Image (spheres, rainbow, N blue to C red):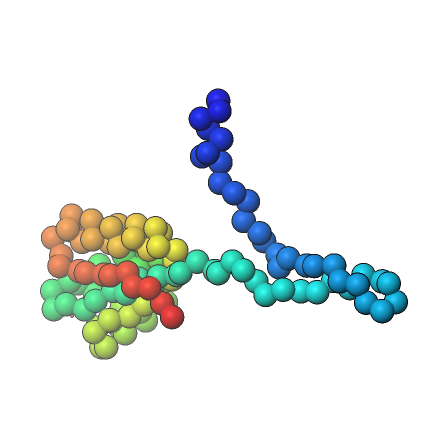
Length: 122
Ligand code: TYC
């Protein structure tokens, strides 16, 4: 199983490292260093308006794939309708890509031109 060794990921530090430091009294002071690991890049899934997809379909899609209650889904749908687009949720890159795929597949299946995109935030 030696070939497996290179596949084992290195442990990621979860807390800032501390370095013992001598002070005048001989006691040990723990000095906090800055965090070295960056939080992962997050992605917002933005749904786009069009003239043909029924409002009810958009509401159901937002409820189903973005886990919103009906009231919230309706508010998001109306924002898209009025502003041209709105954020449906924020996810890691892979989850955001999956949401986009799911929405596009559901829209295609139903014969609607509904579109959404994933974009990095900050
Ligand atoms: N504009 C569409 C209509 O009037 C409704 C709609 C809302 C379509 C949101 C897409 O992402 C969308 N039927």
